[in-house]
Image (tube, rainbow, N blue to C red; front, side, top):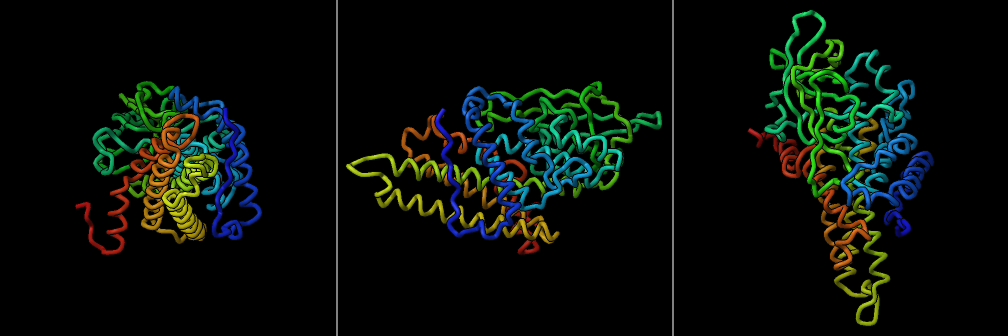
Length: 394
């Protein structure tokens, strides 16, 4: 295994905008990725296995619910700290960041924001420590970009204490090994509610999705519910309607906007290092104009994305960030990252497709990231709606 020599680019001295705590948190996450993720991630991706051994490490760097209050087991950090942790984890691998994003923003966040105090005390400390792993059930086989069309539903069990849940969710990160799932389903009146489904409930199964060419080091699967009997007390009482799961997605998309920068930085750093060392026609390929053009455009786009994410982090910490602003950052930064991955691969030539370097793995991963939690096109239309007032979805 090659040593992890990554050096993060900071062309506009953005570290000056961070507090000492921010930098300490980021550097701790960066050191952990270098020590515990980089040495194993290529093999995990080749074997298409999520390395469960890293779960305690993710918990130790505060990757599970970093902004969740300390009284519930979280680290009580701010939004920029959350973003920086996601950036460093995705620098290692998008699939590992997906595991942390789902745990934090799609499982812990709704329990914290929409759950009862009993829910918070029962689940959040164990999720923060990694003792419990969670998944989030919104996307269905026939309803991806249109989640309001979901058919997963529940009805009263007739005993006054339970509901009966039926349906299926698809493309669910962490599902094969999750202990709890926050599932979105319609009640008998057609209103969407969040329901906490626990491992071991009869009729609840989580088959794994195989044969993926992307996010290979992440466990993906289904959530299937066949007459699952669930206590009514497991329904999240704080918020219902489609706005509830979309609020969770705002938090996750914010993390992705930061995480994609990490993947882009890794590709850029790898390409820059290679270009300085690779000799052709008697000099390093970094001396050729076309290679300099690629590298100069990479650092420019990374710097723009860093500024976008930092400003969004300030707005989100102040409670001012809109869903449309988050959509813009998710779309822009993932698009930026995937383009940089493709250009970086070209700089490495044939070596760029091998597992000796991280670039091809990042490129394949980003093909999923650009689609999940709102596709590239959907986020474009969200911005269009926001600036024109005209709804192109209908």
